[in-house]
Length: 229
Image 1 (tube, rainbow, N blue to C red):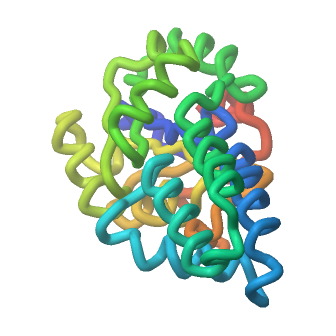
Image 2: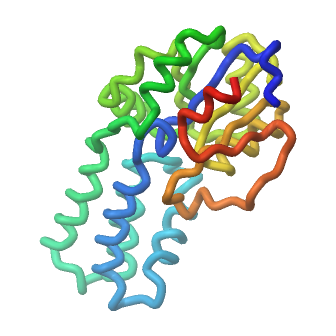
């Protein structure tokens, strides 16, 4: 059970926790795969290799993804891909900058209920600053959070920094998110609590072995958070 006596902050991941993100990216990936599959054995592997190679320089987010998609198309398809096809792929990729960020089922109702609880609610997410800020604005969920922190990555260091910024100790933090790699593992490693709520699709760079831990709770519906508080 969560140590409710000492809990002070509940942090929420954004993409695929508060709203759907990855399924929109998946449609662009499939667009790319259709273009390059005649010229390679494994289109998904080609994109994965490009994204992995670009990660240190570009980080996460729509803009980094768009560069990797176009780079993969050019590298694999080359002159076989027409200017029109490339332009359509670029436009499709850039459309991700305007994905609707509609709250997932039960999210807003649960956040409304949590307003009555004695915990500070914050957003802790990774990605490109302007893109994440715009999605939070479009979601209309910003009013439920007293603090928003957007970082280039979510490792133990960033979780420690979050605790320092909020003036709390790690065991006073509960992290809620869909990614075992980015939301759950680093939170547990610094001594925080975590609730994992998986999304139906996972970005290939976020795949991670399952975790069992005494400070980890696994749920399938967002409103299950309430029964553990």
